[in-house]
Image (cartoon, rainbow, N blue to C red; front, side, top):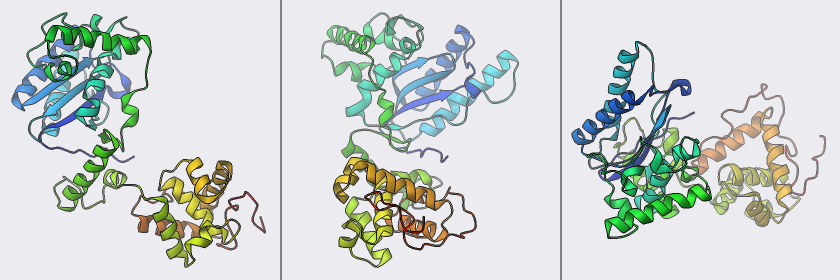
Length: 360
């Protein structure tokens, strides 16, 4: 699996998480948590960060961090590296404390800053450790609702400012905001992260895609060569249905009208349906409406193409060529082959109406 892309620029906001190796505890008691917060405070000051929210669980932590400089990677190496060394020394252990790299999707502050602060503060509630978020001692929730003054490294003004200009009323409103989800759980905002990298409204995500593309092509993203990184490729905008059909028509030397016509030249039509799903990310209902079929017919065409790809080498080459033309990751890269004995004769997939091709 490709590693998430790291995007750094001044003023960026990130939701940072790190988990214990094999989900083992990274804090064995309050002393460890105090040590971690001491390191965190030093790093925030040293690297000029803003910390909008945090929670320390048993085997992982969450931070809502803003970088005033483009230095998240350096700051996180300092936090995780220093803490892991002190933890191992204190508990007489060796080996990795944290599981792989930390996760840090870039966040649109206007759409998700407030919601992510709530998500972070409710972690102990979801885990059944406390009844209300402000009852947990090792998060910033208590400072947000006014139960304590909060540590010097915590910034609450921006989030609370969304609720009221008067601090006391803002804290009351924020406490009610936490209780809303406690009473009626909602889905995680992290379900909306794009390519493990971006969390924001659709317009913001598209703007960031363009910004990342410009930086990558100019060589300003470390380790990136154009769109060679899988994470960069995933961040490219998906092709539209019209683009998919046009590319399939041009590559197979038929017209777009034929692709759209049920029952004729079924291989290109089925391949277009397959790519509309895999490359374009369209729902089966959208594909069915576009091709004049039921969603179940679209699903059958896609499934038959997927089965044929396991043994039909010409079909794999065709779809790899189409993926290249559409500038998307090759969906056939992980499909095992059997030496390509099956030739692309007739149609490797059913027609959109679900008929079985001759000779099958």
